[in-house]
Image (cartoon, rainbow over all chains, first blue to last red; front, top):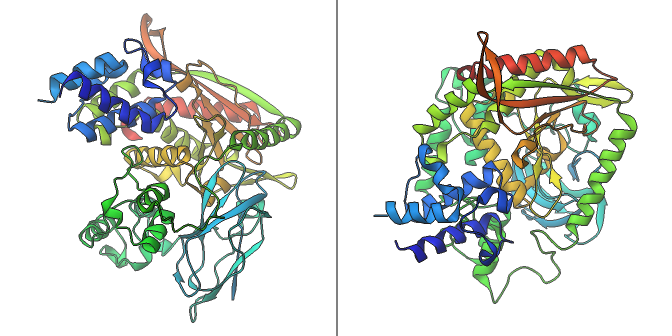
Length: 81
Length: 435
């Protein structure tokens, strides 16, 4: 999986949780939960959706890597094999 | 003949539109089956039937008219020998009365524990058709899991809303050919409609589901009515306590490290479970104020305040919350939040919370001063978890703390009682492995 594919998947899943979000307005480097007003259930659902779409498991210790879009993209590219 | 009427839909929810029927004349219905979909100012609700029999007549057709609670919707012919169940049309206050039989179905209660009932509900397993393998015919968790697994073998693996199933039947669409939302893991009516376009089976005059325009305004009005009544009628008192979550969160982290994402437990589930158990010790915070008196509730149905992205909030119930294991609490919470946000709540969830919990910490607030939802008599608030210095064995250390608040109805309890509740909550959260 390359950067572009990872980013696309991430936003597809995000679109199911926060349909009103325009990817063009998201700052890829800043905290996603604050930026998009996601609560812990949204955040868990988002990671679960990414896991189901890509097969990449996200252990509890790596959850903080998904605080930003950049972090999530890096993680998926590195771990998608 | 049994009258099926528009049931109570929650405090200050007196009117609803009939959106759709999920059954037709001649269909068999059983207790707990979702047979209609209605829409109030706050939500689209799936309405359960509490009787068993055959649909004789659908008295009203779906339409835009707002119908009062108690309106006759359908007639059901009871099965031979089947006694009519307590009717669900009683107003909320009656349902809450402790001397009435429960309004929700409790099939074979004597051989069925609430967690098993809950599991069956979650997995969509019909308990009435299940044979128990436990002592005295008790239905066990394994029986429920087994039935759910067997259903997969029958090709009904797809999780879908009742309306989606009906539409799929009518249009000949295979549910298994549609992809479920990754978030709700459920095929919705909209998914089925999208699959049948450009020849929709739905009549042109049927109302659109989802979040129609103007709902935010009507929901605002409903909240305004309920909260104004609360502040007008209920003499609130407020108490607050810092609770040290060091042990609870450490324990939770250890648990979650072993689990896949789908099985992880959020701190909110831990707080809800502890709240439910603390209420067992202070039952006079759990119930309703009715006819100038307090009616305690034996069951603990925790209302959970869920904010919606479009604005506004709903507070549907997690039923028998004190009897759920932590995993069941988490899956109930997840299911409830996902359905609330996709406007798919059930009428019983809206009508019978016995107390509400709000978790404003999710939105960065350290302390919540919540307003009681009438006719309930208390509400619990949790703020954001913050790292603060505390003294442990005389030494300052930094621990994660949460500010827990209780708003109580002074007509029913005094601050002393409320204080005992917060104490119990603190104590229970220091032993997370027992929750």
